[in-house]
Length: 117
Image (cartoon, rainbow, N blue to C red; front, top):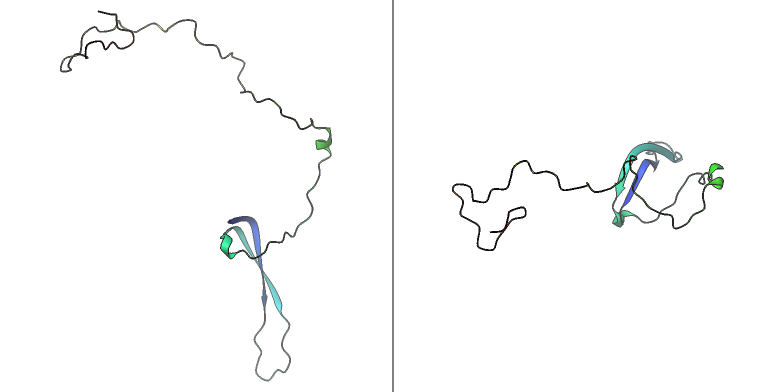
């Protein structure tokens, strides 16, 4: 499973190089780098730990409606969803013959709106 992280930061521990003549090793430094949006392949993830404050509970949500099955309805603009009263008037009467260059339809084939016969 891949991970998508927003506002990601990288913390690296760096050991400074030992200079010639020094007997003590210098202390480790931690370098912070902001990465932003990161996608990690799941095979590269070893462990996960979240560092952040606990989620904030809003006082307004206490007075909200209780959780239940509810009812889903489409939201309209005040106009009912009724079908038109009748069929729309046709702009021209249907043609009872085939246009030039096209063969006639097979026997028994009548498109909608053509008179029988």
